[in-house]
Amino acid sequence: MTLCPVHCSQTCIMLITGNSFIDYLFIAITFLPLIPAVLILFSNFGKEPFNLILIICLVNFLRDLPTHLHMLTPEDQAVLNNICYPIELFLFARLFRPILTRPARYMLTIILVAFLSSLLTWLAVKGFGNSSPGLETLKNGVFLGVILLSLPPIVRSKGLDVFRSPLFWMAGGTLFYLLIILLLEWLSSTSPSSENYVFLCLTAIVRYTLYTLAVWPDGRDELPAEG
Image 1: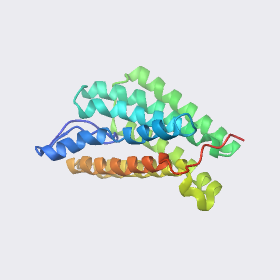
Image 2: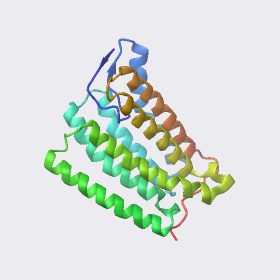
Image 3: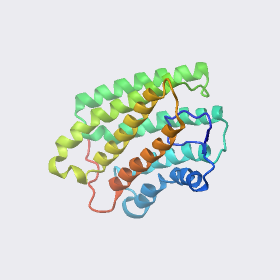
Image 4: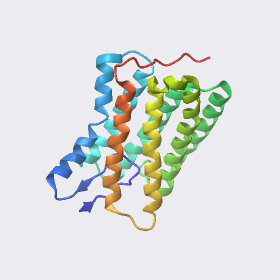
């Protein structure tokens, strides 16, 4: 199995295994974000929070597609990843903002403005093609913090009806995915393994399965208005 040099913090994994079935499976995983996107278009288009989820899925798809189809160099892919990351982080923050208390919203806004300003300034100086394990771990850690801040209010506000909340499934799927990413980054710090990339692809399947449950047209709640 040969592995192209793409950091494992992304869903998209460039693998050539010699096994046609597995190679096509990796390509098929790229299109997983389109499943919840199509469901939204045909059942919940124009409703909140489904519009935000639709955009998140499309951003993930557009980010991952070039890697699986070998369309970009590693440096160009890093540029695309560094552009899509702030967009995705902003969309998730906007997705969870209405469920937070006012102090939590204020704290989230301050943290994200400070972090994204610093990140974009650093990338502007170093170049958007810059990518390193430390940078990816920091980005994933901030993303994880947004999810952990938002998940308890979702559970408290919904109680026994939490499984009807699209925010719960979005948070759960993203939390699971980020925890696996950070675990693999830690395990691979001394001995990178190509099997980790295969495992990450399987994790992506779980992630987008939960995203699909978030938008499943079965009486899902709409986003509450901000208080």
